[in-house]
Amino acid sequence: MPRPLLAVAAMVLVLAAAGAHGFEIEEATLASIQLGFNNGSLTSVELVRFYLDRIRGLNPLLRAVIEVNPDALRQAARADAERRSSSSGKCVTAGGPLHGVPVLLKDNIATRDALNTTAGSFALLGSVARRDAGVVRRLRRAGAVVLGKANMDEWANFRSLAGTDGWSARGGQARNPYVLSASPCGSSTGSAIAAAASMAAVTLGTETDGSILCPASLNSVVGIKPTLGLTSRAGVVPITPRQDTVGPICRTVTDVVHVLDAIVGYDALDAAATSTASKYIPDGGYTQFLKKDGLNGKRIGIPNGFFNYANGTVQHTVYQQHIDTMRKQGAIVVEDLDIANLSVILDSLNNGQEIALAAEFKLSLNAYLSGLSYSPVRTLAEIIAFNDAHPVEEKMKEIGQIIFLVAENTTGIGAVERAAVSQLNKLSADGLEKLMREHKLDAIVTPNSAASPVLAIGGMPGITVPAGYGAMGVPFGLSFGGLKGYEPRLIEMSYAFEQVTTVRKTPTFLP
Ligand SMILES: *[C@@H]1O[C@H](CO)[C@@H](O)[C@H](O)[C@H]1NC(C)=O
Ligand SMILES: *[C@@H]1O[C@H](CO)[C@@H](O)[C@H](O)[C@H]1NC(C)=O
Ligand SMILES: *[C@@H]1O[C@H](CO)[C@@H](O)[C@H](O)[C@H]1NC(C)=O
Ligand SMILES: *[C@@H]1O[C@H](CO)[C@@H](O)[C@H](O)[C@H]1NC(C)=O
Ligand SMILES: *[C@@H]1O[C@H](CO)[C@@H](O)[C@H](O)[C@H]1NC(C)=O
Image (cartoon, rainbow, N blue to C red; front, side):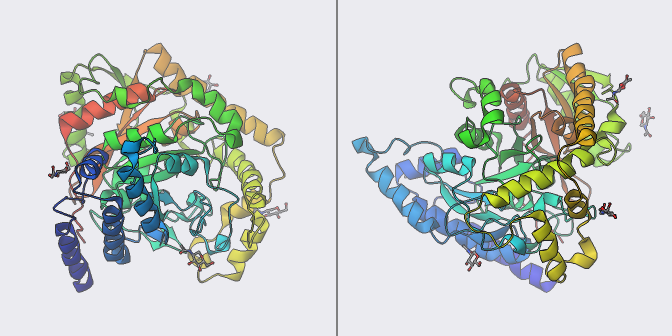
């Protein structure tokens, strides 16, 4: 191990040992945090201090965080005061699972505070949002403390085909805390890393196609990509309202479910999608589906084309064991299923996605930019010009901005784009939607984010949970995906799976 890494690893051990009044904050779940608040062994201020120290110690290595909130300690002190006075009945949020809990937000989720919202790019530095994003308003209402902004693939990996895999100009290159040289995936890279390495218990990411499921899988944490519109996209730097979602990334299924409960619901600023999806939100919320026997009686499909691991690899063996475990837990596993036109669906450059996304991106990004109360750039064309004028900071030679250029060339949603969107809708209807109904499936199970395009084009939900560690120690995950509104059963299955397999380990910081 190179010397600087050794030094940082030693610092991690020191940090891990530190705790407030003996409360073990590293790896702490929301339930234990609330217990600590209630029995007097932990305050929100101590929790924020711990995470700020941890970020200071680990971020030079992991680059998971772009900014920390200068107001976080003040917000925490207010939460502590609210808790002290909650016996008087004045504060309704005190005692809730997120009250006083620090949350890291992906850098494309806007806040109206001291923090910048830049999607990782210097082009948006100094821009000022008119208001908090819809999900942030809900988090604040639940009493959460905004801890800072997490690093991400710049522009959610929609700048260039070369990809940015955990890199942004503002945040630098993020690293996988299990194997530092391994891909951390993206685009919600910093959110997943921060959750994995206890730089926060709660983070939010966003997904258009794989951006929650992939980094959560490769950093051994739990991520939910909700049904389209279940969570508001208002105030989120967009790619397309047809596919964008906001979802939680944490270390346990229970914790992501608590966060999901806090952030779902109607938002007048994302009215069409959030009102359509609100019919899926169950009375009493999602925690009722955290059932140890949640796999019992479930019909789980294993579609062909995803588990392509050679005999003898760790993945081959471990995924097989997991499928056996599901059977032992009472699931009916249906194998050898074909998703119609799968090869077309997985070919995002030729299935219509790129055509549709390019035009939708230009329209929705320009709308986001024009809605800001101040911004140094107001159009995609100005961002392109900014990148050209800052070739070194924005790594133009290595990465370029070909998707931006293609998008800038579009002129709205015309006949070509409408045809692409209806092709995508048909691929989804003839593909996974038909298969799920024909076989009465509760979910399909696939490795990591391999099925993310299948879910993305239909606005369908997915949950990934830690599944194992490969030969070199790189984490892999297992995803449950289903039809729109299937969150309750996906939560039942993923929770039962997590409880019976207990795969997750703390980060190993291997070179
Ligand atoms: C308070 O709760 C925390 C978290 O469960 C626990 O670790 C600690 O021992 C408890 N302390 C007391 C004084 O009960
Ligand atoms: C936001 O960006 C400005 C530069 O425009 C910087 O001065 C400020 O410190 C940033 N905010 C935070 C919280 O880092
Ligand atoms: C793996 O092994 C099984 C039997 O043990 C065999 O049927 C199968 O063809 C092998 N697959 C590959 C890809 O080698
Ligand atoms: C944009 O359109 C112009 C004019 O049709 C064309 O010359 C150029 O190659 C296009 N650029 C991209 C990146 O598609
Ligand atoms: C999908 O494949 C079927 C044949 O299996 C074909 O009839 C259908 O048109 C295809 N759909 C799309 C959108 O390509």
